[in-house]
Structure formats: structure tokens, C-alpha cells
Image 1 (cartoon, rainbow, N blue to C red):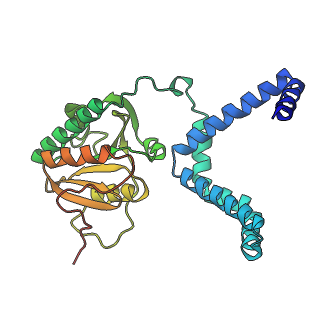
Image 2 (cartoon, rainbow, N blue to C red):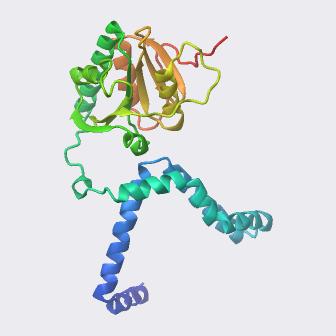
Image 3 (cartoon, rainbow, N blue to C red):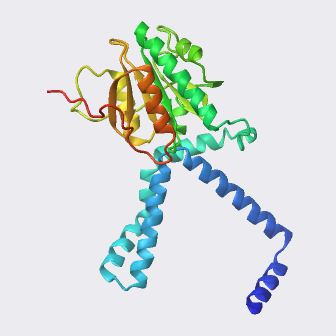
Length: 280
């Protein structure tokens, strides 16, 4: 142990001030890159690549020649494949690097207490109930563990406190933001008028409109909870993990969101009946 400490001390003594600056710059760059990747689904692909490397070295260590040969061949074209696979994320990453705001490195204003979450849930439920009565279409996204940065960037930034009145005003028909989705992060309305991906499921009922298909589409690729108010029927629904729960009331919506937001890992809320509504 003493020999190891002596080696470390001697190595540190050889370091120059420029070396410390170099290490600090690299650490800061890696920190920002990780934060930027966390904002997109690319993080899941990065985890997959890390697992691939781990399996490659394990196969090499255990002399699993066939597996090692296959993985080695895959890694030879890995650099090109990464550029192709991550092309949208890389472009988005470079754009966002040019818009880094030092003031947003640490969000000290974010309120993530249980009371704050419950206030947000009650505001959403109240707004959804009021819009249901007036048959005002709405699409509200609650961010969970999967970051929604790539969808947030498609909307108009608001950074406003959540209230039922504000949500109802955003979705007033024929206003600039009423057609898109509102995204809520850290108990604040981050943006409105966002574009969401439509589901590729062709077995959905034909009475489900674009809002419902967008809600299901986002829930298929992220763990977000998406609340939909139908413009045609006024019915309230929740999309979660690719499934749609319909015909919710203000109370059942409040219970469902409370259960969903209290869970650290994505899972289905056990309310009434959760199912895909398939066309006959």
C-alpha cells in the first residue's frame, strides 16, 4: 500500500499546472456532453454501446472466440454506424451546445417536493375537468425519468408555474399554442405548442384523433405520462407506456397522476381498466 501511495505522489509531483487545466477542461466537456445526451433518447443507445464493449472484453477474457470475432467485426464499423444512428442527436447536440446558458447549469428554483407535485397534479386535474366540460382539446405531458429535451425544443418556451387557469388559457381554440402539447418539468410549464411523435400502431380505434395518437406515440418512446382531453367528446385520457386509459373523471385523474408521479420506475397505473382501444 505504501508503495502505491509513493507512486501516486511521485506521479502527481510530475504534473504541471497546464496538466491540471487540461484535465479540468476535459472533465467540464464530458460533464456537458453527458447532460446534453441525457436530454435525448440517445442515452439509451449509449448504454447499449457500453454493454457491447463490456461483453466484448468479457468474451476476450473467457476465450469465447466466435462471440469475440463477431463483436470485433461489429466494432470495426462502429464509428460509421454511430454517426448514422446518432445523426439526429448529434445535430441537435451541436445546436444545443451553441445555446448553452451558464445560468441554467444548476436550477436552484426547481421545487420537487411532494406538496409541490400534488399542487401540480390538482391543477392539471382541475384544468382537465373544466376543459372536458367545454370540450376544449388539450395535450399535457408530465416528464418523468426520460428527458424530453428534443421535444421541448419544438415548442415555445414559457418557464411558468403550473395553474389550472394558465393551462386552460393555453388551449383556448384558435390561439397560437392550442394545437401543440404542454410539457411540464420539475413542476413548471417549460414549453407549450410542442410537436410529439405519432404512434405507428395501426390497430387503434378510428375514433382516436391526432392528440390521442401523439400521446400514445410519446408514451411508446419515453416514460412520460400524457393527459389528453378530447375536443370531440370531452373525455379525459392518460397515455402511459404505450397504453391508453380513457373516460377518467377529475378524481380518478388525480389518483392516477398521484400514483404515477410517486413511482420512481415506469409502471402502469392500476385504475379502472388500462388497454389499447382497438378497432373491430
